Length: 350
Image (cartoon, rainbow, N blue to C red):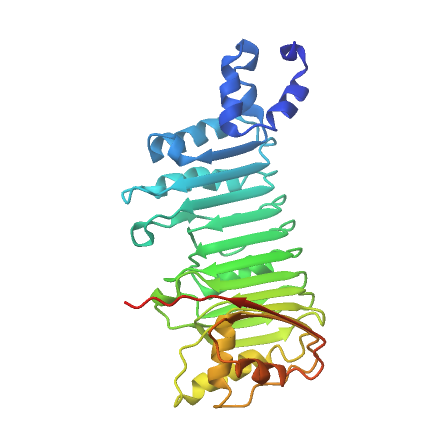
């Protein structure tokens, strides 16, 4: 019988189950009653509990039962369908989890139904020697003075509220082997200058989650990533964008837009400088949104030359003016490969 197997094999079997499935095995026999508590992963959805207090209490009991050395993976999905949800109840137990010495994967996400009535989940990050993957969604990070994440390779921060410019910079710089970074800035954040300094970063995606409600009117970005191989920009609020260093073989994906004011010289400079950052790129993808503002921009200032660009992919609206393509292609003297995808874009009248 399976129950006669040694504990370490039963733990291995339970690892292939979800937390809910593993808990259900406790009814099989007295031998199985507590086995699920030793599984090194905990994956929970708050919608499976009657309220936040019950869910937070379950996490506390699980952590109190387990030895410090067991938990490796933690994932919590918080259902905020009820605007009265008290997500602050999770702060103490999340703080305990992130301090576990062998935690390798830590993920907290919020199921947003109505953004305006949703509260950010408070979290205080701590030094974690083993953490490899950190994924946070709609989290409000508390301020911290020092942090060290020596094994962190993947960091996804979606709609995360940062307490200061220094907090963002510290979080990135304290991760010496970070390779994949995605940041989606919260519409109410206080970040003025976003500094991305990393000697190890290979992939970087930046977007603003809610540009319409941004209160600071935009932010400046400084990127110093000599090993960067891929960059994706999905942002509408740049005040300035400066690249100090990146790999010669970097691939760039541009999906940016500006509300152009033809008599605003500073706006023209922002656009020109942004594009000029990528004059040495060899491989680029441009969205239709970006093509539109390039077309509107070209009669204000000449488009920067993409001297080394050999491969270009673009998305273009079916009803767009054909004058767009020559303007872009003339700026790419070394272009060898061009792929254009035509899309139907419907604009509704209100």
